[in-house]
Length: 503
Image 1 (spheres, rainbow, N blue to C red):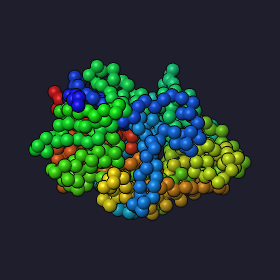
Image 2 (tube, rainbow, N blue to C red):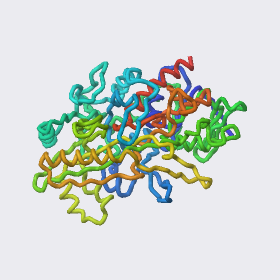
Image 3 (cartoon, helix red, strand yellow):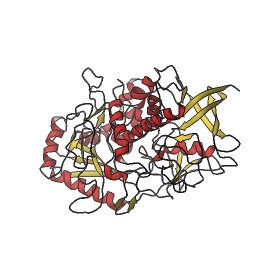
Image 4 (tube, rainbow, N blue to C red):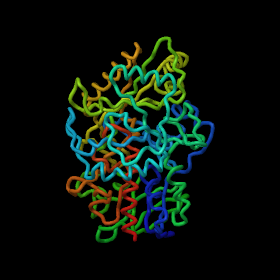
């Protein structure tokens, strides 16, 4: 069995692992980046709704189970860049209030072990890296910034700009959603209607492959292995250090040794790898002396809202440009946080057909032609009973019971009222379930107390000296905005920390 030796091994190439690799370039450290999948191909199917949503061309043939035995195909993607290959490219910062204890109607959203001010310089760094377009000073909940957005906001198309005026007439404050797309002068983005939920055929989306992994590989000390599955990690006799990863590469088993190991497989798959690595010292999984590994699983409470005008067509192509945060912390009508409302990429019949197979396609197309489409998102509060389980038979079981639903219902009602006041008599909503897990987080929360957290504030496992988890697993709360930029920012912060260790 061949053995390879490195300074740092990073398992996973998504927003956490890919950005971390970028942060380690030019450090002199010998880094191995491991990905179970391969590069996502550029092909016509990238932009075909039926291929992406109905045929699920880019999802793995993988089944997870709810606690009641319900089967579902998870929203995970095993490619260089991970889930960022198909994400909607929304890259907001968390609110400053999200870093402290925040009282919700359904309970407490706990404080983070770092402050907004500690992470702010890395937010600025990540916005540069991921080419974020935005405009400060409009969002009423916006946290302070040390620098402007790197690029000018993505402008609203005429129909959406008219919509913004209708919302402002209600006293609301619609703002330009921070977006990571290549709209620079001479950039690759063509502002198509197949961005949100699709791979980008022209590589204009600010995903982890294009913005982080490929630039990182320009460093001769950083190596990438694709089609390589890490089966388990092994510690030394003391149980204090990881010494080796066992991998399957091109059908062969290999051993990889390193001074530092970073698990960045996503909130569920990172947990599964640590559970599969159980030993006599760690019978329930590596880094699990607190018993919290896999617990406090969060995915956001999500509802898709489709506001239909019976005669007024919506000819917008690139719709995902605007959001509303007036209900994020509280409103005049209700004194608790509700969440974020943001535009979706323009819905098309092929996308709707996947969820409404019994409705004739012409009917769905007629609705899509006259609709404006929103994503209504509320915080999913941490609950230790919401957790990931690896069964004795190797099945992935997700225990998840939605909470904080009073707040989410209030937000859906507010969004519905907002659109009816804007002139849309027909508002349709669909609340998402366990399979909508693109914002999964929280399974290895970070903190200062080893009894109540899995990781320290630099995402190192409390129990081991050289094991880190660098993906959304570290979130102690889910907040109510997209997590990608925060993952990237923490990855850059952890990279600085690791460079100090290596040196």
